[in-house]
Image (cartoon, rainbow, N blue to C red):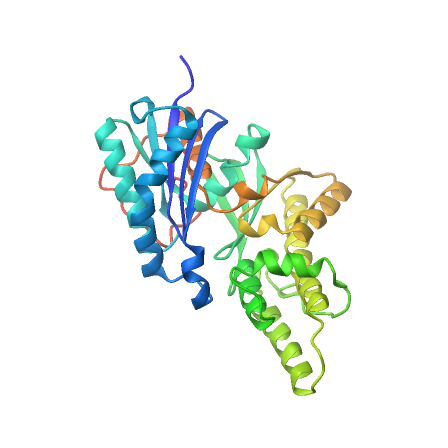
Length: 344
């Protein structure tokens, strides 16, 4: 018997993602984004995101099935992000997933968005080593996770206590007059800058600070004050140097804590995921530090790092293979779903 065919729905924020997976093989990854509708607000507006999901859902499902070369009746299981995320956006995905699961008479799996970011790496690099450590960095999350068993046990070692790294990128980009989302334009500008030009602070790196937690609010404020001081003095703002120095501060803290966590827990495999994992400096510094520490670094392609349906289908496939019981039909959304709840 062939491996089960799983379709995954992702609507936790502003991306409508539908992925189709068989085992560890990605067959389709269809995506519709509403980021352009949020750009003028400088951030995601939940009501706009929810409406965009409603409009994009059915066409995106049809496109995913067509790209995969399968029909809906071929699907063996449905997976959907149940949290964390924006409640209204999550509810759209849940409603669609429940409808398809009911109509097709197949099991439904409500999965954790963060665990799905780890699972997607298996589509590119094969089965995950267990235990592994995962560094997830996005607009809403900066987390260090210990992963003894992706289907059943994921433990949080550290997380952001204020702004997530991606959120800091967006806010610094706004200060520098760059568009939303801020990650790509800052990455591009930093290529022409000097990362050592400005010594921006590294949050929560003192001897008394939490070993694995993150804080980027102070860094964001330091950048804003530095830029404002230049402007008050009538001096030009070296945008490339600011971007490079800010980016270096973020990458330095993230990679240093991830490598330390690997050493402290005796883990020699690190998975890097989330939208900010597409940042070129973060990927390069992680590769450099992992090589020096004898740690195997696994990083999905940039497209798979951002929110997508493939990651949800990948985790659903892992749950089916592990014999995990499906979710109940009355599965609800949980905007603050804890990471130790892999499936609901």
